[in-house]
Amino acid sequence: MEKLVIIGSGCAGLTAAIYASRAGLKPTVITGKDIGGQIAWTSLVENFPGFPKGIQGPELSGNMKKQAKKFGAKFVTDLVTGFTKRKNSFEIRIGKKKVTAKCVIITTGASPHMLGIPSEQKFLGKGVSTCATCDAYFYKGKDICVIGGGDSACTEAIELTKFAKKVYLIHRRDELRASKIMQERVKKNKKIQILWNTEVKEILGTAKWANGVKILNNKTKKTTKMKTSGVFLAIGHIPNTKLFEGKKIIMDHGYIVTDKFMKTNVNGLYAAGDVQDFVWRQAVTAAGTGCIAAIEAIKYIGELK
Image (cartoon, rainbow, N blue to C red; front, side, top):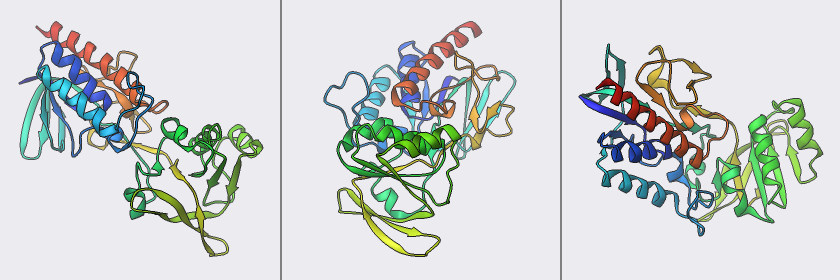
């Protein structure tokens, strides 16, 4: 019987592991395939406190893991394949193995919707980004494009105009899906040009960095190449909660619902990071909620004694 199991190893999960291990709980962190979550895809992180020169995403998550291990956290690099609530515990299946825990923190994060083309994976973190707030600064005075047509895409495009010379909003339909007020803001912004009925078929670039896109006008069927210093995907996020569906955990549009203490409606179950945050989705906010969840889990386990 484990005292605490943390499912996920992004900023929320690793921060929770640091706090829980320092409290002597020796938590088990089930990392998934890769450690670090979305931050591990980021080449340079400049908005995480304490790193005035910035830090590589994989290095940041690697340091957080080392810090947690230093205080006694255990790591299992595998996927959770089953999750069951028992009377006074939780059963977590990892392949053919089972782990039982008194308390669980879910930090499985959210995955950005992707276009489904091989080149986006090739250039992810190398000119292809899913977060304007994180990466806009790197595109000062440059021409870039945003793919999408909802509120997220419009927000990203507007955010990027603070730095970019020109922002092309690429949308596959002839009208935006965003709210009326967001549409008006985009259309009034002189730095934004909307490319209607347009789809990105390929992201072009060198071995090191993206430098253009191949686009198709789905009305005229004409294909052209456009130079761009960066490509921002803004077609939504998918919370990684499929594993927890049908488990009597309250969700809203797939995101786990928590109170301000990161508690779910299930006793002894907490959630932190992008799996429950559909607003900010930043590394530092994920770390903050991971801290809260761990402190509350420590209290919960202490009360069980």
